[in-house]
Length: 321
Image (cartoon, rainbow, N blue to C red; front, side, top):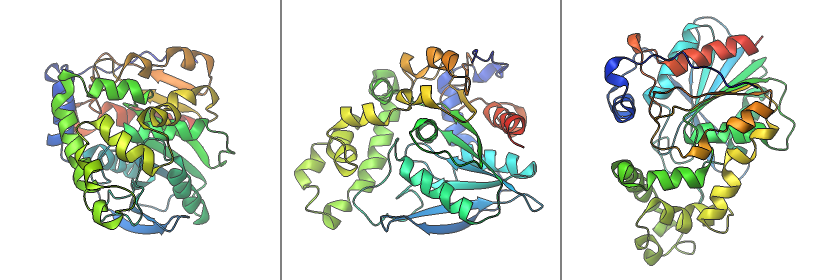
């Protein structure tokens, strides 16, 4: 599919990728979203908390919203999308990944960029409600990688799944990790690592047979975290095996559902491999938009409805029923 020419025109003060990223993550507020929590039990006995918000009238359409690394369903990049879709007659199911809903999950494992088994469990649960004829997915950052990987895996995609939107997707996890570890992103990397280690700390007492205090103390960087915890807890040999097998880049050629990928060219979290031009040109289901500006999960516009949210709604309206 030809590359989509972006129409995003940032406000003059949002051209900086840094400002766009920080403002959207720390300063944006979204009001008027009433979320109702539902807990579902996963096949391995763990749980996921889903935060639902609804359109004003009964809807047969729902969008699944997936957050990024150390995010949750109340982050503005999810509630902003939920509000826009609710206002346009579509229910929203915002997923809190394992351990991200304010309560520790039950097992030693948690969530990661390629945990599509949990996304599939959410989709199957929604289908079991026998209410929705159309399902869409919008993933942000880590959640975007997960959504794209899901769409390209060897599975029978449910007929109800009509479209996917991926925003600021680290399609190549190794390259994205290397960017995060660079000097320009040092503040972000420190913040992410601190959050991850705080969540891991209680597991030292819960699962002493899985991780030791010395293992925990050896974690000095994000790649260390993936070596010590992410890979071992989720069935990978090491961090590099995890990056290779969980990267959506490997799955893009096989995507079977109309999927829109929006990655800004000034996103400091993304490596060059995260702009899959060749894959998009060779797969009629993959639409790639590369705005010059936007930062990481930015795309600020007037009125507190962001560009990527408007494009997501337009994409859904085009490829839904």
